[in-house]
Length: 172
Image (cartoon, rainbow, N blue to C red; front, top):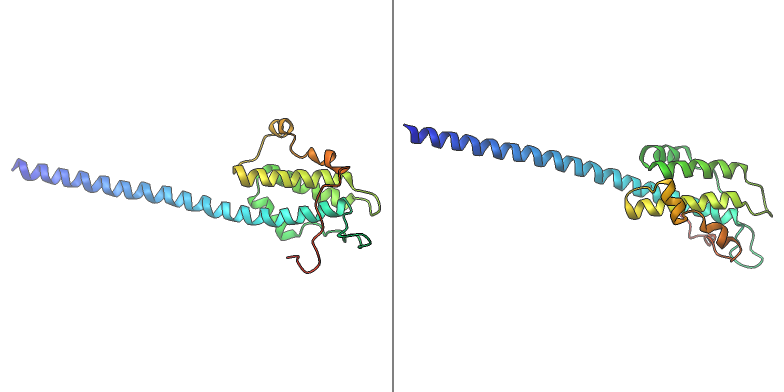
């Protein structure tokens, strides 16, 4: 009689272990899938914001596509839906820089002056997005200062580097 009881208890323990393993696996997979979906959405909005920041930066530096070419048009402020997606999915550093760039774009002077503050903010936004995409985390303010993230703009301003406007017909 004891042998069938031992077999029953062993069977129940192995069934319980199998069920608990399945539950644990499902929970971890659900969490991983959720993180993957969030990361996919974050990367998508970052690509859109990066393109917008490059247009803003090109306008701030008043880059032309060639000699005698007209100046690029002033970019529009960030669309309401894109801004909502930034608030929902972006990291805190990127959200702060998006707000700064949007504000500086509204206050930037018209040509022929360079909008240096706007250029610095747009460049810092591009740096922050690249850091988050590469590292999957944002850098702290102290780390940004130590690595001089967003500060290369002032060095490069006089050297002719910076974003270039897209040729007509290649835009998204």
